[in-house]
Image (cartoon, rainbow, N blue to C red; front, side):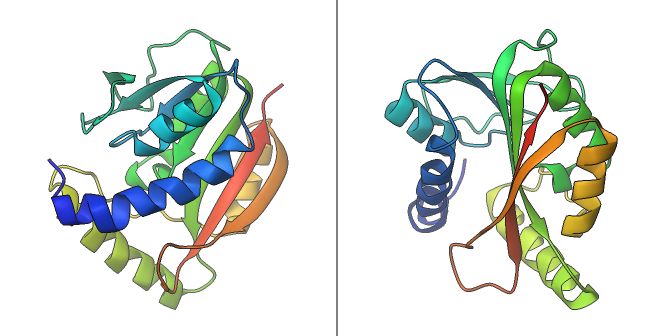
Length: 192
């Protein structure tokens, strides 16, 4: 269970900001998979605003919504090829030893696009801060969340998207919730 102060002061305000960005990229009839869904606050806000059908998946069950959720690894999603319109990967890839495997699997199940939010860095100083803030933020929630710190520079993500055969539509900065020396990026890739 997530501590109440984290939910009120960090998780919900962050979810609102991310959901507002994502609502612009979804349509009412879409079926969306939120891979690495956590509490599903973001998914629930998108569902309420757009009426999209949203399914969550994660390796741990932190779901605090009424939305459907399955516990499974992102590297092996129990969904057919091209079975959802959009896959969301919201600050999840750096929690995997093999983030490319999760991305490849997300591309497999997506019919239209994959939307990725990730922390990126440009130098060792920024990478060090990312590791510290990621450790502090995630250990506040649970000691069970994997933290391999597989952060990548923006250019490396773009290369990976290209190598996996997707078309990068946008790579936009996403403002952090607080003043932090971190760089958030929202990537939208088409898989069609």
